Amino acid sequence: MTESQLRAPAAATTAHDDPHHGRRWLVLGVVAVAQLMVVLDATIVNIALPSAQAALGFADTDRQWIVTAYALSFGSLLLLGGKLGDLFGRKNTFIVGLVGFALASALGGAAESFGVLVGARVLQGVFGALLAPAALATLATTFTDPKERSKAFGVFGAVAGGGSAVGLVLGGVLTELLSWRWCLYVNLVFAVLAVVGAAFLLQNAKGQHRTRLDIPGTLLASAGLFCLVFGFSEASTKGWVSTVTLTSLVAGVVLLVVFVVVQQRVSAPLLPLHVVTDRVRGTCYAAVGLSAIAIFAVFLFLTYYLQEIKGFSPITSGVSFLPLTAGIVTASTTANIVLLPRTGPRPLLPLGMALGAAGMFLLTRLTPTAGYASHVLPSLVVLGLGFGLIFAPAISSATFGVERQDSGVASAMVNTMQQVGGSIGTALLSTLAASATAGYASTHTGDGTQVLAAVHGYTTAFTVSGCIFVVGAILTAVLLPSGVLTAGAPKEPVAAH
Image: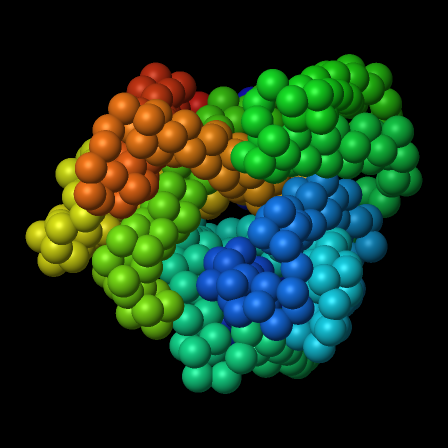
């Protein structure tokens, strides 16, 4: 399939034949609420973990499974969830995902044992894998006018990028004022709002050409992604050279290579390879993945620094991240509404990566006595602007011009890159930080060595994250073509004015 053929379908979708056109802005609100619920869950539960552990009495070695259980089911089933939305309709898939996610959240909130809580997190991941691709695919197929699409994806990008920081604030408030259980119960509020909106506003749009599900491809992709996420999760606790880690990572790579081979040979592939081999789309997927690896350093290690080194309460540390959220919202909306329609993604993503690198390198100045206003705040503002310039344009460009029957899997790839990137980031940066901390402690003595060693571990993670952003800046600058993306025209962007 040629590049021009890839872009042409977008031109065929007009306001006349789009069933959501007249209520498209209300649809955006429903999708944003659902996306916020999924994104919040990534960080709000982390804030609740210490309280949940104290209440249920599980060991420190088991604590990671509250996070890993969700990541495993969510990350491994995203491609399947995206394809089911294409086959059976995005409204149905969206509502089933919302209801299932809400029920799983209720089960987790009421859990009286570690096993029940882990099981609930698995179910959250399963239904999240149905919900997230359906939400993004609905947005991608609803907003086809370039100007309106830019505004819609600016809002979506702000939610996707800033929701995690909001989760830190909300998690701190709910945990301190109510209970850790409300960090799960709060999902019911979001789900009810989104279900009511979806029931009245959405039509059950699906692919124009109904095909059967690619069973071999589904099994290979799900198993491969499961092994990758599991391997990276195990690396953070058991090390990179442990038998379990190496076996899982190798198995994941082999399964995904076989998956690619199979997708080239079947008539109705789970993931049509032209979706990811497209120059713009593939680069945007890579940008999302690299950013997800690096961004975990902010939420994970800066949270540790603020609470363990500076003594901030959960609420105070959560509020401390609000400048990051403000920067993401400002940059996301500005980038997509004002800049992307005029410049295309090429200048925006490299600039966002460069700002991400600058913000991370600024955080390497942290010391046990560093002030929030002088050392943390400037970094958060710069990082927020950088993340906003990356996520909103990348998500919009990654789902632009996809054939309607492929919009679900194209959207699922965005979420897959975020999830796999986050798993890699957690394992890689946690391992490097732990090694740096241990190395510092072994070569230094005296009062305050433990605190200094911990800060050294954090700044090491920030340094590596900054380097990852540098790689992302080079990659996007080299691979993205210049100019704006235009539907119905040749795939190569036209020159910007």
